[in-house]
Length: 335
Image (cartoon, rainbow, N blue to C red; front, side, top):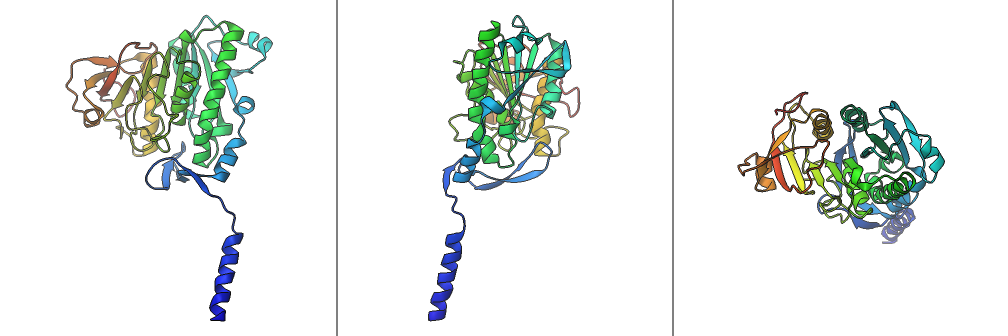
């Protein structure tokens, strides 16, 4: 009897000494732990329930101090020029031209300025048009292997980028009517956060396979009203990418889940920005109007009307869900 009590006392003492890290937020219904592929294709077991320590880690991220803004133009297509909030004199020394359109690029989880997303879209935009391309390196917030922390950092980063745009416009005379904000994965939702924090007046916002894990019930996810024209391209829907429509216009290439030529979720997830790059450079992707997301995934779209996916110019006033087929390798467009 006494021996049993002693054992129970020891067990209680040991467990009481373990650090207590209470769960304070559940991102989505369903399994707490899920495998998510990172940009390198490797699987990471992520916890979709937020704890006190997760929020403490997120609180250490200060996007106003840690986000870095890299400017690329046709005058400096490969070596960026820094833009620092509040330094008007430094901005005047860069190649930023307020009379031209400005593209803002937002990478995803575990990525940075050198990500494949940026390596594809910076030259893609500059080859297609003489524009300002600003790459937002928010790797100080997105680089945590703890997915919950990176997800939590998406909101403050987006709010901070909105402040950056407001300052940039004041300092340079640029207008929101000439902005195009493009984000991939977590960056897709951040693009929407930026848009709504500048009053929904950005001319063109594109979400490229906006992230799904942790966003189904998230009030900060991308919405159709975040910009004057909003578009979403879904290429790994319901897995790494968001399943349901998010924008005024949503495209589901090849049904939106598994892309031809891909053997992994990450490959399909990345196809969104490779399709978009090609659309910017040469157009060619024509979607057929669908009655619903279910018919888009099934490829059973027989409604009248078609619309080009992606591209340089916003299709202001257009709405709907569209399906199209692509090739398994570049050129991806079938016309």
